[in-house]
Image (cartoon, rainbow, N blue to C red; front, side, top):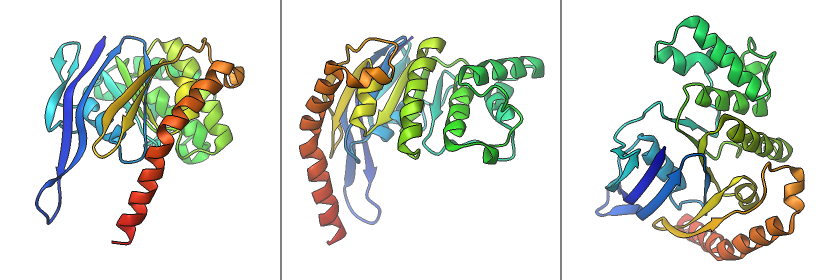
Length: 266
């Protein structure tokens, strides 16, 4: 599997005004089989927009996405998405939620159930198959969402700040779980975050984006050993790269806060 982003630009028309808002400008990126790539940058740099274009939810204004050499023009089960808000169906059990994509593919009921149980076991939700989303915690909901995204056997898992709504402790635990799950399932992952520590902990490569419009500012290889565990965060290389990225991004975040304050008062 190979995913290529070639000269992708995106702009949106300004409602009621002339001109357009430039969100992405000349984005180029290649993702190989089995990589865990993190898009990192300030709010408004187009990380989620780029992920939505790769997913096939919206077209680029220019450029193209190639999935194994074929241009992406629509959503495809080979690219599944995990959102920040879980997006589980509240009227379905955890297992039926995981089976949902398989049912859409006309997989037979017994096979759907087998695959769902396999991935629920992978995300450590064995025993919760018959619970409803309101009966489980936020972290468990997100693990169920990951299982649902993995069940159709996608080439690439697209994750849009999936841990952003969780408390700090659950977020750290799920970062460790995701690192384990991605390795166990041998999946390619594109992960969007604005958390530097999360990016360093998870990534094989970190793509740092600048804002207004979003561009690839730099790409960092992360040489930390796997499996990643709680001890990873105390390694000298983890601390050094985290500080390096913080020093690089701090001016952007400060500028973004100042621009937001200016827009609020104009």
